[in-house]
Amino acid sequence: MRALALLVLLVACEDTPDDTESEVESDTDTDTDTDTDADTDTSVTCRTLLEADPKLTDGLFDIDPDGEGGAAPFQVWCDMTTAGGGWTLAYAYTFTHYDDFGNADNAVTPRPSWKAPGATTRVSTEAPTSEDDHEAIEFSLWTLIGAEFLVRSNLNHTIRCVEDGGSLVDFLNGPLDCEVVDNVAEVCLDNAPGSIIPVCNYGPCLSGTGPYYYWDGSVAGNWPTHDPCGLNQFNQVQGLKQPQGAIYLR
Image 1 (cartoon, rainbow, N blue to C red):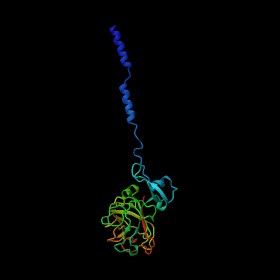
Image 2: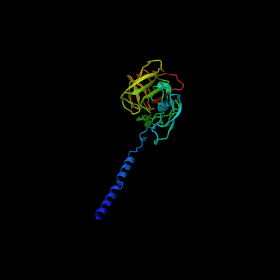
Image 3: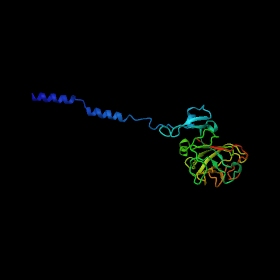
Image 4: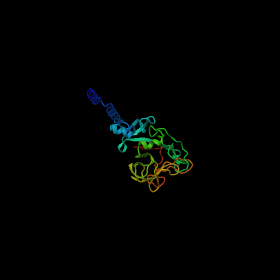
């Protein structure tokens, strides 16, 4: 009788489900259910817009360089045609005293919020909506938009530059790989700068033998060189009614 009772108890124990093993398997399944969207890049620039729709043309678009969860999207001018397109207008400027270009009180205005000790012209952090709207995107966002840049001015040649050790958006001194996209001045055709000095007294400058583009932001010293020969001379286009320039990023 005691042997029969023991046999019944043994069978009952073997038939009992292993709840612990089931719980472990369930927990394991839950842990492997990862969020595949966690690393998705949600940033939007003129370049990403053009990549998504190659038929886009120049115009105003909403961009969001730091993506979802960052600063609110804002409207900018996008150049979708020059040198492959996808360019975000980051900075548009004019001059304080263009008619006396080499005078110390001539400078670019406004200026971005980049490092420029001693600079005195107005700082802008408002995105320009055209090249005639003289403003500048907050400089900390530039690196999120793109390291390649295009400089267009009616005083000097239009150039495109890529990093080659030096960087405009990261403010690194060193060489650049630049080319002329459009000859604007009548001298030194197809001549492009080859390096950048981020803090060239009162703002960054691109150089050849000497300054080629210098965004001088002080009305108390220096002058904003726009010399297509890269010699820091007065070879810029003169006699303009509306002198201005712009920096685009991609």
